[in-house]
Length: 137
Image (cartoon, rainbow, N blue to C red):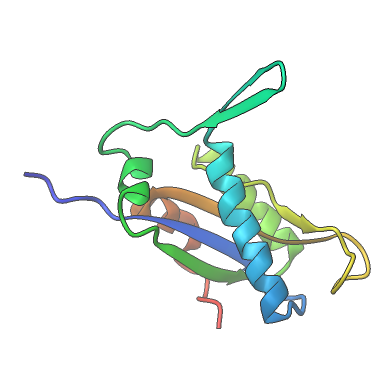
């Protein structure tokens, strides 16, 4: 029997802007949810909208959903660094949320890009991009 491969989701957060813990928690949750919703199929009939999450047994999504939902929060240095990491993840074909932009109504004075999520994907695939980033403290 083959060992089960590790699966995770990594949320990349800018460390060059001050984000209070409550706002940070919300932004990270937005990124995590956005990645999951992005992987769902979409169907609209009249007034009914249906989103469905389908995955193959043994796939990264299957292991994550039926497992322990591993999430890791890491820091990047700037908006341009975050955009570069996002582009790399997209080009590698990983599941990637859009970059989350806070609308600027409370903490920030204007719309501000804060974070994005990579995965769930197999850990070794995400590590190609994020292994050099520091864990958020």
